[in-house]
Length: 120
Length: 107
Image 1 (tube, rainbow over the protein chains, first blue to last red):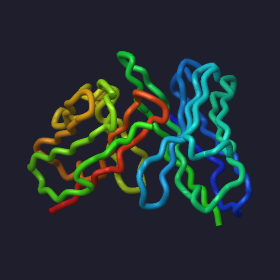
Image 2 (image 1 turned 90 degrees about the vertical axis):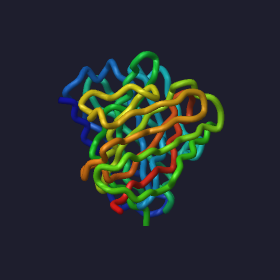
Image 3 (image 1 turned 30 degrees about the horizontal axis):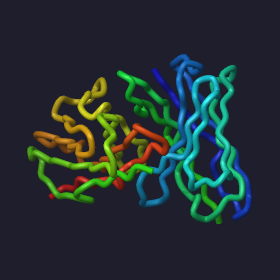
Image 4 (image 1 turned 180 degrees about the vertical axis):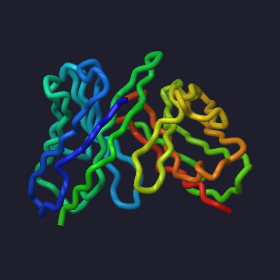
């Protein structure tokens, strides 16, 4: 069974930093691209970043403006999101999601339960 | 960036109804379109990928159609567990944008 478990969320002051982790199990982690998606309270889903299986390709939403860094450690089957210069508008539940490619179409087929980041 | 616009933003329906949600892309995305279901306090769940392919384990009362810029998610014989918020998402290009969501509520 695919499992993704996020951790590292919490309360942080504006301008502070936080590192989120996503522990993966139940699948061959080093064969899949991974993503971070967030959801502000009462709002919709916002894609943040993607990283390919070998970390060769990394993409970010323009809205992050270089403040966030995605990374992964395949030996630890873990995904990370380093968040710096945090703002109130970064308050959200942060999800990691597995990237599945079927017939050349990508989708996010497995999600973690999310970790809440509150910037205040 | 490709903008994804869903309509309606919310709708009220009864058990047994047929529900249709539309998603429009600001430019052609071929069939690079996914649908997700999200219940309160839970992570999103993939329902449909590649516009019309049913994800494993998803009931057949869910279906997707469309190509290019206009897409539809249909739910026939709405069940109590289907009351949720639904999101479309394009994976044609970066950023992998989501629609704003459609909340399906009990009438």
